[in-house]
Structure formats: C-alpha cells, structure tokens
View (cartoon, rainbow, N blue to C red):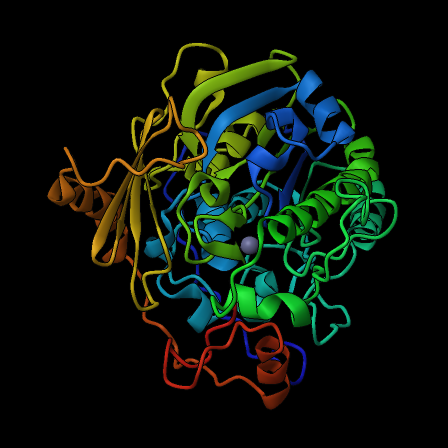
Length: 450
Ligand SMILES: [Zn+2]
C-alpha cells in the first residue's frame, strides 16, 4: 500500500527475455531526468540559458543534437525512456497508476544483476502512486510536502538525497534522479529571476495564478510578456543546472552518467507555457548527454535518436543485458561511428485524451497531423518551425501506418488493467489548482497531470 490518501500504484510483474549476460565488471549508473527541459533553450544547444555544469558534462562525454521525445507528458514519456517500449505500449499508465507492460525496466534488469537501485523523484507526476514508477527500485524517495500551486520539491533537496544515498553504496548501483524545477510554474530564485530579462516592466509573472488563462488558451500574451515568461523559464534552467552539480560530482569518472528530459515546453505557435498538446520541436527536442569511461570526450552526434533509445544505451554502457522485445536501440555504436540514427521518430500526444495529434520527424522534416489539419516544416531551413508548408507531399496513411507498426507488437502483451482508483478530494484540489484537471467528464477520471 502507498501512503494514506494517495492512489495505489500498479506494478505489472516483469517477464525477462534478456539478450546476453551481465558484465563481470559492472559499472554504476546515474540517470538524470530534467522534467520539461527544451533543448533549444540551453546554451549547449545554441540557446540562452547558461548551464555550465551540463556544458562540463558535454565536454567529457557525448552530446546528442537531435534527441526526440515520443510523447510530451511526464508519466508515459518516462515509461518509454525507462524501458525502450513506445509510450502507447504501456497502456494508459497515468490512469492506471502504472505501466501494463511486462517488459522490464532498467531498474528491474539492474536489480536482477545485483545492483542497488534507487529513484529520487522531484515532481508529483512521476511518483509511484501517480505513475507506478517505483517499479524495480529497492529505494523510492518520492514523498515531499506539496504546495497547492506547485507540484515539485527543490532540485537542491533532490540532489542532497541522491548524493547521500550514493555515498552509502559499496557495490554497483543505479540511481534515477528526477528534477521538476523547470516545470510550470516558472519561479526561479535570485539571481535567476531577473537574469535574462532585467528590464521588463510589465505585469506578468511566472505564477500559476497569472499564467493559467494563457495556458488554458483564454488569453493571448504580448510579445514582451512571452519574452519575459521565457526568460523566467530560462532562469529556472540555469538554477537547475547549479542544483544538479553536486550530483554530477558524486557520480565520479567511472560511472555511467546520462542526462536528458522527458519533453520540453512551448512558448510559441499560439500554445503558451505548456507541453501536453504540442508536438513542435520546442516541446519534443530534448537534451541528451552521456558520459562513461571510453566514450569520445566532447563529441557530438548529429543523427536523430529517440528517447526510446535511452534504456538500451544505459544498459549497454553499464554492462547489463537488454530485453529482446524492446523497440529502442543502444546508441553506443552510433557514438563509436558505426551505427545509424532513427530515420523517423514517431511522436504522439496522449492517446487516451481527446483530439490526439501525431508527428513524424526525420532529421530534416517534421509533419504534424492535428485533428482537421496537417502541419509540415523543413527543419533544415526552418528549425524553429515558423513556416508551415501545409499538406503538400504528405502521405498521411503511411505516417499512421508507421506509427501503428511501432506500437502494435506491444499492445498484445499488455496485462489487464486494475479498476482505476478515484482521486481523493485532496488530490483533486491539488491537481485542479494547477489547471490539470479539466471539466468533469472530459478525459478519464483519475487521470493525473503530465
Ligand atoms: Zn514532464
């Protein structure tokens, strides 16, 4: 049972179809997920937000230039990242409070090989009770006091707890560390609150109270307001970078370190300060940095990859076997110059919500199927997706078929869902305060936010 007042997590029992054996000299692993971090905002990707600790990691490891999220919400994106199974292959994990896939997680494979495993969760949408993400971890640190208008705990505290646990380990360990600092609302502390827009004189700030009408599409921000909110977000990114520094120091040079994000955030395209209904690159293109002994320091991989490739990459670098069923591929050959990236990454908004969108992205072109319209962008000339080329040349049927081919093998393997528990009144109030809970009767009841 979980803590009183929270829904109970659902943990499917994994089945193992592993290829290879665990290495006799296993490496410890630290995986860092920075929730809601858009690659294009970071200085290491040409953006404004200064992130010296991530830059340092990139200098000693590998930076992937085109790493793409398959779904712009927290729970399902993490399940895909953590297994190598596409998001829809987990069932409606937010409503079920867990994945219905029996494919093992990185934590389950590592645990089976004798690793100590721990998860440190910074945001309410990835806790075990919300998403079942505690599956396979010996130690889950995901309980913290919640502000009604916020759903996170400070990154400095997440780091402190992860570093304390790492310092106690004597054998191989796996630490999954999740930071929610960049997620809405945008409320960086000094000096980051004024760092990137010191001359702003308008009335808008990054709080839930002020931004909710824009997030809901009821108000349209001015250009100055957008620039200011974006500056607050960038301030949060710099603040987060500083917060995770001690964790990067604690990991040590012999440890596999992977840093990424589940999705980014939208500050354009008429979709303000949100992510779950956007498939533009500001939302889908995420940072991906990997450092491990033997990898070429300071290298950049230009080829497109998907977050679905994170799990097999972590396992390969640690010396752990992968499950044969997964759709992800280890990126180690690509890093070493012998592999290929993904020709196409298929992304989708949450299939359980109304008005599902789908996207197909190649290294140079993006097509987004929205209900009633098709958007197309030439990413080689228009990386910010400002000029919609329309439906010309788009084969919708092929796009849908490609997506279905990716997902279909996993749907047959889903274990039955338990009856979803209802939200408690406290949970409903808390989630409702952030505007996550739509009017009664819209998406399935009990669905936590993304
Ligand atoms: Zn998220």
